[in-house]
Image (tube, rainbow, N blue to C red; front, side, top):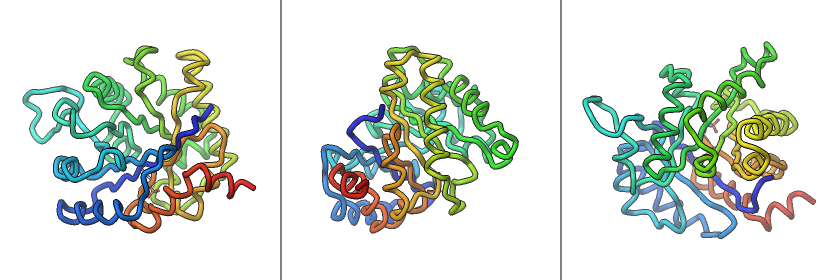
Length: 261
Ligand code: 13P
């Protein structure tokens, strides 16, 4: 099940320009301690990745792309490829609900991106999750099945160890609606079961699964304490240095033990 190391990802979405992102990283670097049992990943806008990669202390923070195109080079005006991001980021979000639902990314686009990330030595964080409508119609597990099968179709068993999954129910993203920990637990079990069907038990036990959706400094510990959860994907609360710092502190093993008592 979940490893000892917790992963906290801050997805800044389309916020902060180059100068603001640099100042914010500087502030975060004063607040967040380097811990061996917590990995902190920042996902700023593509525009800021190059400069932040020069500024960042790689032991303290890793960088993730929020998006990229799946082809490596060519006539794709306006796009940035995983090949171009290689060496700048260690991770890439793929299939975020905002990409799926605002930009109409299909499972085919998503599986090509997962494959492109792996091909370019970038670890993909494949995001999956049901909409409010799908949940209300009892389709949550079908959606998770389809998004996992669709998103991982080009990935071999060996390559799966490079992939991370993030469960983000769309109805909880940016809405302030908290998913009940029991609900999250059941969905994460379904995700691991699906991985087991596709890749076997060892893969299902060892794949890292994150949770995201309106997580705050207040709710973080409840989700982090769930068996099967390896970390959190934070949107809004990652834009406030104090609350993001607090979430990272809660992921530290010592804090988790205290809070679970
Ligand atoms: P919020 O934490 O703002 O709900 O966003 C979650 C998210 O989409 C992270 O990728």
